[in-house]
Image (cartoon, rainbow, N blue to C red; front, side, top):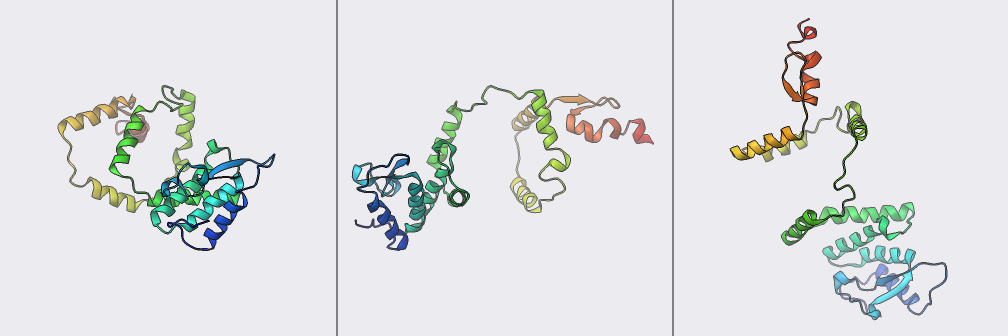
Length: 232
C-alpha cells in the first residue's frame, strides 16, 4: 500500500497501514462494534470510495486517529487530526473511552481550539446559524424563582470562583480596550434602557432611592447614609 504524500514515513505511519491491512480481508466478528474509517481523511483529499474505506473495530478506530496525529507533515493537518480525535469524546457517538484515551482525546480538542484560525466566511456562517438555530432545548423556557435563587446563592461570597482574587492582567487588558472608546447618545440610551429593563429596581426604605437589588444591599438599607444605624 502506497503511503499518502502528506504522511510522514515514520513508525506511526507503518503501524497505521499495518492495521489497515490487517482488517482489509477480515470479516466482522459478532459482539464487536465495527465502524467505517477513511484511510486517507477527507480533509486531506480522501474520497468516499470503497477503496478508501476500512471496516475496523471502534477501539482500533480510535487508535488509527491517534496515529494520524503523528503522521501528518503539515501543521494544519495535525490540528485537524487532533480535532478528529477530540470528536471521540462526544456523547452522541456512543463510544466508551477509558481515562487514558479520554485524556488523549481532550488534549486533542484543546490543541485544536488553541491553534484554530477561523476565516471571516466561517464567522459569518456561524453567526447566521446562531441566529437561525432552533435546537436549543431551553428556548422559550424560564427558570423558576426557586432555581434562580439556588443559582444565585451558589455564586455568592466565597462560592464565587473569583472571591478574594485579583486579576491585574485582565484589568490591564480591559483598560487598554476601553481607553478612548466613545459611545453615541443613542447607544448610551440603549445601554441604559437595557440595563434597567433587565434589572428589577428596589426602593431603599431609608432614602427612597430606587436601585438594583445588589446596589441596594451594598449601599442602602442598613448601609444607607440616612439610616439610624449609619448615624450611630
